[in-house]
Length: 359
Image (cartoon, rainbow, N blue to C red; front, side, top):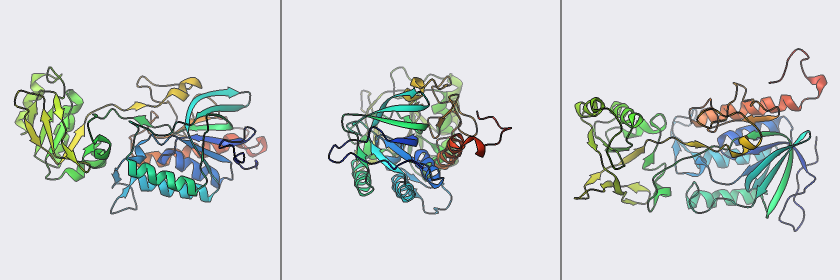
């Protein structure tokens, strides 16, 4: 076992000589699942997180087995941090801005940037997460730190291009959504607005008919919809109201969007209870690129079913990967798989099956 990670007294930084068995980049469900399981293998684990991920929104996960009344994603995150700490995982607040191979190790460059204006999450969730971090002895990168690790698990997540308006971050997960699989059930008999102009948005609006008949779709851009007239006819035939206009505003209060206001001559106001935006999240793949990890055409990290990347010693899990469905349950599974794969990589030669080749 390695000597445990410790801060240099009074420096606010980290001990440069510390070498971890695994550096987990990202403190959402995938990263924390990896940290819990690797720590239970008695590996030294450092979780590096910039508090800029989906798990800090107001989203409540209602389809995760074992929580019949649902559980907030931020609560899963807090419980996961406590669980990982129980088995010895350590935490560093900061943003990994660079990664490279250093002979048999990996060197990560960590800056002190954590959260900030425009970052994911609500103020309340971020503040609570910071308090828990302090209680767990989380260090914060001071200036620029370097971390050395034998393996790396990339659980870097995605960036969501939500519409920006006053109060938008309080609305995400409460009245502003992106996933029918996660939140379609909650739209039953409610007034729902869909924002999007392409075929995927049309399909989203039609899919929501399984839950509610009160649906309005707004293109959200000048020039209307980018679909065939036959698809607009499909919407109309199913009672879905269409508006090929840009949006002027999203009136909201305490995280609840009250209406969609169109950018037309009359500033048409469409009352809504919930809004679904059709958008494509962008995988946070900057570190993967630096390490030479293979990406697919969408920029997602390519992994196999055990979460190996094409670079030995580097694994990936969660929403940034190519085999995902953006579910908490999937992220937790992938984190566990990545931990098992990293642990096998860390085995001494005598512990390995001589007939088995590691990917």
